[in-house]
Length: 249
Image (cartoon, rainbow, N blue to C red; front, side):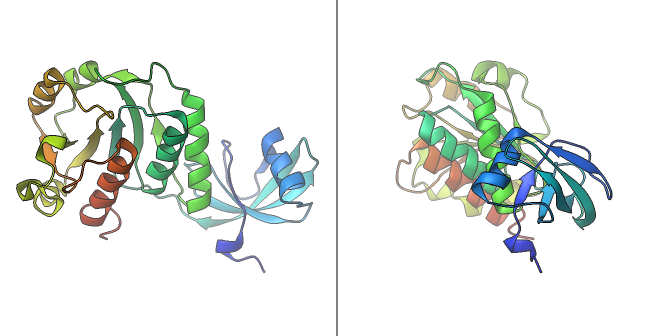
């Protein structure tokens, strides 16, 4: 018998329901046939981020193509907290890491932003998406974070939604207990939220002034040390989930 935690889990962007026959793309077929050495009759879990997670069985498989049939619903669709992660992109390997870990930690939107001191000129959305899918498959997450296009911070702040709290991880207040997570996060438990992480060089004075002027901004200290951007992002996501998100429920 295959238990839930021993199953292979695959994200497949196709409608899922009992009896649905779903084609496997070349990458999935190669993974199952060549890497995992599976064959017809093998059971696995599949999800699409919309219809829940289904127990499925491989009915055809070669190294280049295949099919599975959905047998039964394993888990109804659910979604995590409405939590955005906004960050200035970092170098490629650390960007991959950030996309993976933000997905594992439940971010609903992953949004790279262009800042005055950002050193990255362009990013590949498809690479971020691939990392998010892999992380969702491994962590039994049923939804996928939305990957938004690389955007200018100024433009984003100009259109900031009034009903969403902006958690500004500001190095100016590092170690200031007035801005500890235990003090700040309880104020936004019932609100939609976004976390803003700056580049390695921090935000410019003009950017800080514009961020401070956002209606629902909350400055947040991540402790007494100055953290690298990827560490700061994961720390802030963890704090939010522990105090406001689905870790606390």
